[in-house]
Length: 127
Figure 1 (tube, rainbow, N blue to C red):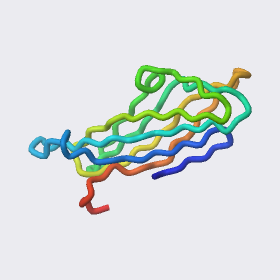
Figure 2 (figure 1 turned 90 degrees about the horizontal axis):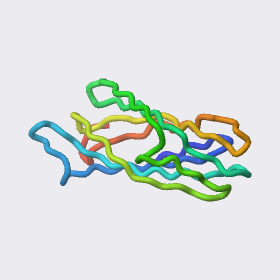
Figure 3 (figure 1 turned 60 degrees about the vertical axis):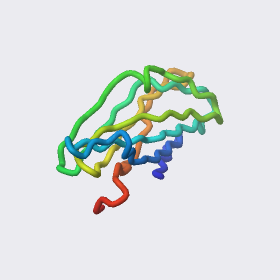
Figure 4 (figure 1 turned 45 degrees about the horizontal axis):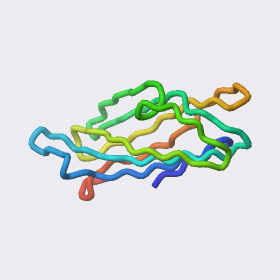
């Protein structure tokens, strides 16, 4: 589990390999990742957009940008958490993701909540 702590939010990510959804003949390795965003501010914040940088085991990079997460732009009250699970297919048995969430506070101030690098790896990959 990776924990990211900014002044305003605490982000934790844990990932899992999903062998049942993977197809090694292609090759396609499928991973899930659970993101927990904790609002440590005194005000409600909203997640506006996301940016992901995904690097596979061959060094290929894919960048993902878009509004919200899973089609939502959740509000997170002070002291509350928001969790979601998403998925990432890779052509290799390991990779790394990092990025940020663009957030906005009640006072209109926008900020980026950094997501530190975390691994996507099969149980027996050499990392």
